[in-house]
Amino acid sequence: MYKIIRNEKVAKDTQLLEIEAPAVAKKIMPGNFVMLRIREGGERIPLSVADFDRDKGRVTIVFKPVGKTTGELSRMKAGESIMNFVGPLGNHTEIEKFGTVACIGGGVGIAPVYPIAREMRKAGNHVICIIGARSKDMLVFEEEIKSVSDELYVAIDDGSYGQKGFVSDVLQKLLDDGKKIDRVIAIGPPIMMKIVSDVTKRRGIKTMVSLNTIMVDGTGMCGCCRVTVDGKVRFACVDGPEFDASFVDFDNLMLRNNRFLEEEKKAVKSRGDVCGCEKQKT
Image (spheres, rainbow, N blue to C red):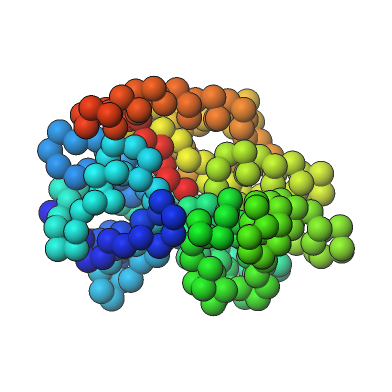
């Protein structure tokens, strides 16, 4: 069993969960994800890692309670335990000195950007962080991101804070103004990552995106998380979750991610378990 140390609301419809998991914390790296299950017979759900503390043996995740299982998870209290917490899964982010790195996060995707930006800066890069949300009350991890950034830009869709517009608009302006960027990492909704990729592809800037896909087992056995990359089938859980954005078929990804929307709605309504409907929350 894995004890919940902290479960708190950090933004509108967004929860932060800190789990006591020493073995996972010891090995986890930026870019990895975990699979958790609340109880026997429950749904397994994949969640991106927002932070980790090896000394305390804790792992932090940030998620939106959009499905049956994440809804139940959001209501659990500190001191309660979940049955399974498996990780690290997937391949971690490639961290090395590239030069200037732009770390871009949208929505809850901002949270897993934080450890990536932190390690990129430690590796000697000039780190530009661009984060965005639909409104100010949905913005997460601003202070954490600021602490690991050489430059920080905030874009809010409705203009209630920071710059009005999208993270891709900020990136486009920086590039138009002559800013040299050597590597981009983007995490967020598929449409956001697609538009960022469109901006960078034209300029030949390598861009890595973390794909939030439907998963069941997280080990490559079920095939539910298959994505099309460079015209070939890949599995986000073992081949990813990060891929070169210029080769990702985002239209196919978005189509597949909507496959179980009706089942997920029924699961929330009936409070029953539906296997494999929740996507990685990034």
